[in-house]
Length: 414
Image 1 (cartoon, rainbow, N blue to C red):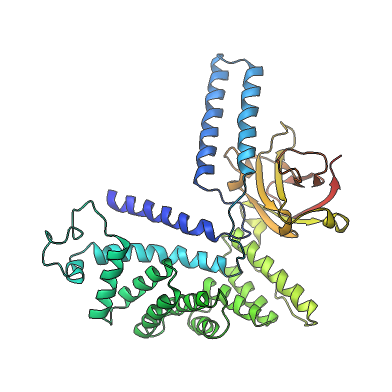
Image 2 (cartoon, rainbow, N blue to C red; image 1 turned 135 degrees about the vertical axis):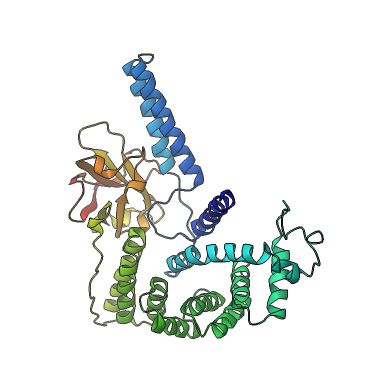
């Protein structure tokens, strides 16, 4: 049992490493360092609370120390997030695929390489000759894994599992053409299983710079014929339709994908951004489209839906890379934010969801009956308000909020 717990933790860490670089325009997701700083800050506040209760710390010293800790938290939120330059609308679909495929690859490799079958694959005649078979502290290198998988598919070309793992290995090495060939074999051996077709389409798209036109789009639609509710296939199908200027089908596919991702508000908001973009492109092209509307009510989830925009007269005053902060504060309490999200001005207009993950000191949004929420473009680059910054009015919101909250940045800080 201990082994499987450790294996699960290692798989989670591996997913984190893979998913963070794929982020693009998602809600604030903290990295390991930020989470560690948050934990340390919470511990400091707990210590201060204990000292105050014990009488070893006076109220003035306590207030000052706590404010310093909260300021450090706010500055930590202000650190720039790492986004992939030039990312496209397939990024989230790739993230969804990783969530499914990486655990399958990792545990599949263990079952292949950590079992007696690996003795045959690697050509070793005994456990003593093959330290990876059992009990060795030395893990096989990527080159050894690749060699073993390549040998296995050569000797047993009907082994779909080995072909699949080899495809993931090639994809991780950015050998997308080889990955596509491996996935093609998986599709043939599994009678065109939807996940094999999706993986094949994704690898082929990567050989085209991320574009799904042509064969990749055909494969995605073939996968949808068998799995019409698969959110990854629907997301990719929407991307393929959008690239073909088929705005109506792009909107249709993305609305269907929303339903399968209802419990992932960040993904839903990204889809809504893509839908809005498709509508604007259709209007510019003089094409009429119909939107069936969303079946996902984010207001029912543990979050507050926010709609951010900037007044037209201020748009020329901002640069796309200037930081944009969203703050939630107590209505009657200290001015330090309870929650914060960092974006950039270039992402406006945008819809985001404020969730418990954005709280700076733990707890839940529902711990507060009301919150005061505002947004500010920090032209100084700092989270604290400075002259020349652009901001919205602060809106008092009931928690939970029954309707989306409109924040319009229309004021200049004097």
